[in-house]
Image (cartoon, rainbow, N blue to C red; front, side, top):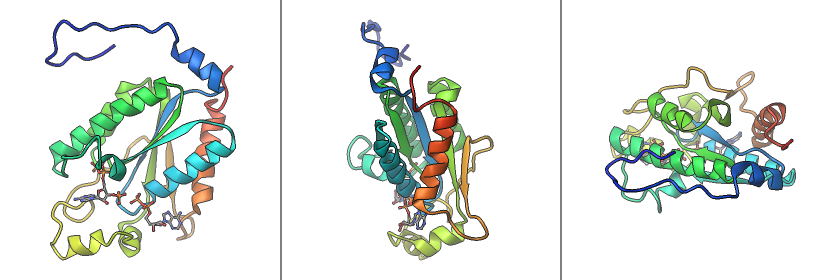
Length: 208
Ligand SMILES: Nc1ncnc2c1ncn2[C@@H]1O[C@H](COP(=O)(O)OS(=O)(=O)O)[C@@H](OP(=O)(O)O)[C@H]1O
Ligand SMILES: Nc1ncnc2c1ncn2[C@@H]1O[C@H](COP(=O)(O)OP(=O)(O)O)[C@@H](O)[C@H]1O
């Protein structure tokens, strides 16, 4: 069902081809893998590696990457708390549609606020929202600084940068946590393997 907001005189139209038929066709179950973490923690790397692994297993996935969506769907949104909330809400709604289409939707956004991630979780049935926390130390993310943004933030040239002068609220009850082992970050292939194992164990990679 939809939440109607300010619109009136609109009605929900059921389509005769349903989610279960699409899932049967694809032999998988639609869900959302929501990857959260600091800039540079490896969200996009995991998203791409996971999508590749799933593809090689014959499973259909689609990546919604925060940075990429800000070029289109979310063009015009900034990084205030309100804009981030709207950014996450929109991506949550799109992810829900992809999951309904039967796909394994991989959403990769900083999504720093717990309440925003929880709101996306609430859009789906609980088991179909798989929250993956990239639990990498800020020092590692800052050392990587692939885009040079931490340097700019430290120099005061970017204001409100997550982890520097803007908050990041780590998940309290995520389904999967990716972290360093003995001070070493797992490879992209190993990170993807951790998520694939979870999806396999929970029965998302088959439709019975
Ligand atoms: N102020 C500030 N804080 C954090 N990140 C910033 C900021 N300004 C620009 N960027 C770049 O935007 C990318 C994060 O976009 P998201 O849509 O994932 O952010 S959020 O979920 O709405 O917080 C983020 O991409 P990733 O490094 O892939 O996380 C940055 O490249
Ligand atoms: N598991 C990993 N092992 C080694 N380097 C990684 C790993 N994950 C990410 N990186 C590197 O860290 C940098 C940031 O990764 P990225 O996926 O862009 O992070 P995010 O999307 O969270 O900003 C990139 O240069 C990437 O190649």
